Image: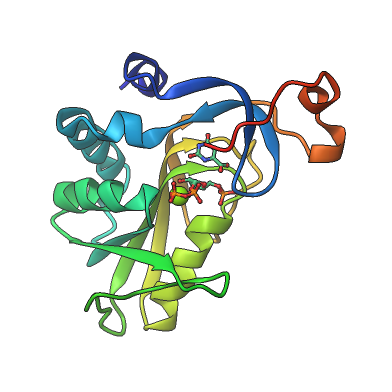
Length: 183
Ligand SMILES: O=P(O)(O)OC[C@H]1O[C@H](OP(=O)(O)OP(=O)(O)O)[C@H](O)[C@@H]1O
Ligand SMILES: O=C(O)c1cc(=O)[nH]c(=O)[nH]1
Ligand SMILES: [Mg+2]
């Protein structure tokens, strides 16, 4: 599957000057909702990502809201597992709400649309582990961490993308006066 082409085709590959969740700046932003709004593409992504973990016997898949909600659903469907999502808890972490539960010992796969630092998916992982879940893998549509993100379990992505990302004080786009976009 040509994931980059899917982002392009759906207008989800943005170029400019973007503020990332982590506070880093980048000339590239992958707007996954623009891709995942298409059920057939979302399903294809879910099947491809699920396939990378088909031997893991997962009880549930979890992703951090919002980006991880649709993705969790399509991957879980492909794996015959439950689809959970974690939500911001208002204190910088994430939690399970809305009657979503974990049975102690449940094996789970964490999924993320785009991993930059991995901090967002890590928060969803902590929420599931706090309820007794056992993490068996992390899957992403795109890994743009430059090989830096690690979770202590297999981490697999459909696409590894090498893109510049800068600390704000070292950002050449800021230096050139390019307006910063919060997407
Ligand atoms: O690996 P990280 O450095 O954490 O960055 C990547 C995260 O940023 C985006 O989510 P965002 O927090 O913007 O919110 P959303 O999912 O609600 O769109 C994206 O969906 C990832 O969750
Ligand atoms: O790091 C981020 O916040 C981020 C990068 C990206 O390409 N897409 C996205 O949704 N978030
Ligand atoms: Mg997100």
